[in-house]
Image 1 (cartoon, rainbow, N blue to C red):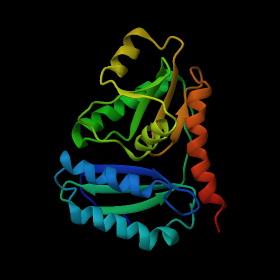
Image 2: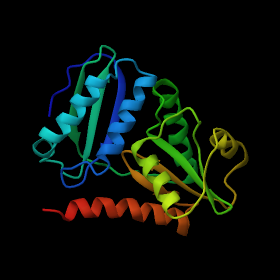
Image 3: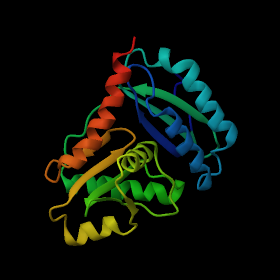
Length: 213
């Protein structure tokens, strides 16, 4: 993969790999294209370049870290580069820790229209997605959304979810993070069977890719 010789980053994407492949490739590419709404340098040709680069060079480029993280950086001039690094899991996964990550990612979403990490809450047999209606789904959140609908679980967007949880706490809610880098991460202190179901579904995708020759 290419070395970084770029200017000020305009977009940074970190996507989890499995066995040298990108399990959510089509979803990540769609989310990359959606970033053009907030970042003019993300053009149709750049998205096509990224897709072609993944198809042609990812297998060789990820040889040292086949289960690592693919990082795509686009600078303010529209120059782009990719690299692959080792994956490191989250050390802290309490609900407050996941909330903080989602709050930080919200700032990125305001600039690029896509949040790389979203907080989800199980509430009254429905899933509440802590995002705004004008934001586009990240690769992992789009997977959670589709899985929920397949399972017949209603999904509601709530742009005030993060601020509400910050002010009032989590109560007995099940909480999980949907992250393009870390997958589906249930809160260590506010997990549950439904949050775990989505984490298991994501993990199965990675395992399926890892077991392929």
